[in-house]
Amino acid sequence: MRKKIIISSICLAVALLVAIVVIYSNQQMTVSITVDRTEMTVGTQSGLGIHAQAHGRFVERTVELTPKVDGEVDFNKVGTYTVTITANYKKFKKTETVTYTVKDDIAPWITLLTVDDYYTLPGHQYVEEGFFAMDNYDGDLTDKVVRTEAEDKVTYTVSDAAGNSYKVERIIIYSDPVPPVITLIGEKEITQERRDPYVDQGATAMDNFDGDLTDHIVVEDDVDTTKIGDYSVKYSVFDDFGNHGTETRLVHIIERTRPLGEEAEAEGKVVYLTFDDGPSNYTKKLLNVLDKYDVKATFFVCNGSEELIREEARRGHTVAVHSYTHNYNIYRSLETFHEDFFKMEEKIFNLTGVHTMLFRFPGGSSNTVSRQYCKGIMTVIAEDMTARGYHYFDWNVLSGDANSTPITTEEVYKNVINGISRNKVSVVLQHDRVGYSVDAVEDIIKWGLAHGYKFLPLDETSYEAHQRIAN
Ligand SMILES: [Zn+2]
Image 1 (cartoon, rainbow, N blue to C red):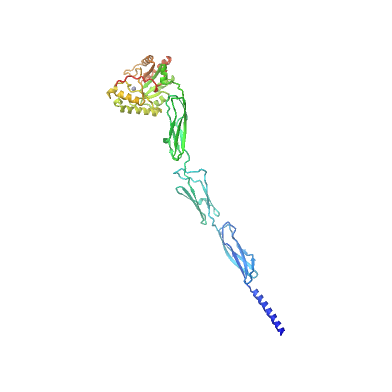
Image 2 (cartoon, rainbow, N blue to C red):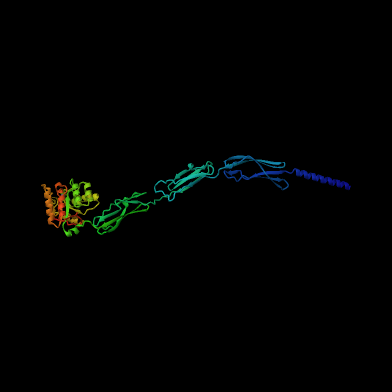
């Protein structure tokens, strides 16, 4: 009986063992393959990770397997790649087909170039400073950049072949930091004699943005022509942006080489040669004679050759008003006189740059012909013009060259030197439209210089040799 039990027990144990072996040998291993990513960004190698795990169904046991990979992925090239991954463990095996996608998901970028202190003038087109565009995969995309310009900014956009796009803006800086430039007309440094009128020649102003600003120039000067010294004339102009342009001219006032009328007259023996009614065909010849002896005279001019009037002033003579028309009907009224006078005054100013304060009445202040046009007009005009600061000159030496009957050059010469001889200060009346009178000038000067006379041009301090007003 006991033996039977023992046998039975052994049988049972064997059966159990067999059962365990069978159960164990039938145990299913699960081989799994896990891939962490199947989408990659082109150019980045990281990301492809493959690993497999094995699991027993009952027994918790993990076996690390080394998967076998068939097929390749080019991470530097956009595309889809199929790879077969196989993992084996004993009789267990797992195969998986994995599709990898390598794509370009990085946007291109645009680099804007900038120039130091760059600006665009208001109202002007922005001039591109430069830019370039690069893409991680497509490379240089500069040619693909689309530029759009709005009022105050430029927008740059670019897309790569994969459709990734990039956009950047540039703010346009509008500014005008450049001041206007003032250019002096004439010399930057001027030297002239005391009491000669200072005539500013002006300046021009140009601005890079506003253009011609000449009309906006403000001129300030401290020039005092009555005193010897160094002075400055300051020109200044602002552009619309408030940029300030300046320029300075230096004016040196030096002592006179020729005395003023009143200074010379105190000593006496002063001769003022004056010529009316020109310029004419004889004026050039007369100017040359005067130059030959360095004698300065006075021309009371009428409307005529602009070149000669300019030349008279250029050679240092006094150019003053006689009349624009020299028609006595200017004496109809103060207004008609003014009209004629200021027309000539303006012409002289335009040609010489000097607003002369000196004039001689047609016919002189003592003329009676004006009575035919308006009784008492000479008194009215003389008072009016004096009140305006003008000096009118008559004469105290007649040459006789305006007589209705011509005389000889010799007679003109005699008339003049006889007249001069009688006076301390002489204001000689001649006409440079009269040829035989002009011909007498050289001998008059020779005689005067030989007899100790000073020939001077009239100025505002000179003896006016007024005659009696007769109308
Ligand atoms: Zn005259």
